[in-house]
Length: 148
Image (cartoon, rainbow, N blue to C red; front, top):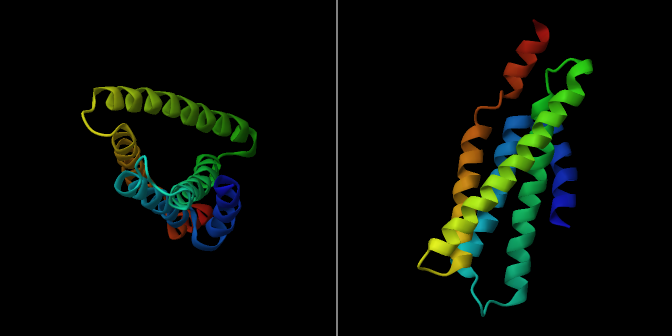
């Protein structure tokens, strides 16, 4: 549910604030959800807490997914839109597979609670995504590009 709402919200936010701001916002929302999981959730956690944090994380990811695909296809000629979208999709799938493999290795090698280790690993990946999001051209840069 959070991803569905996030994708819709991501499109609206990107139109109002630009791709970079929206992507950063989505990453930060997701980071709060994951950090909350790492810090607050254990075997005895009440379901509303778990549900709320999962909703927060998935909302952020929905915003990021929408913005990622919009960023991947921005400035690409109409004839290349399918290729750009395909490359973005492939990157998302490969990144997810590699990320999952890394997280599984981290959790099996960890001495602490596996959920905390996994969520900390996911938080680190989101921080990397946040750094990449700052490399996305801002609205002013895109406007200059369109004028040229």
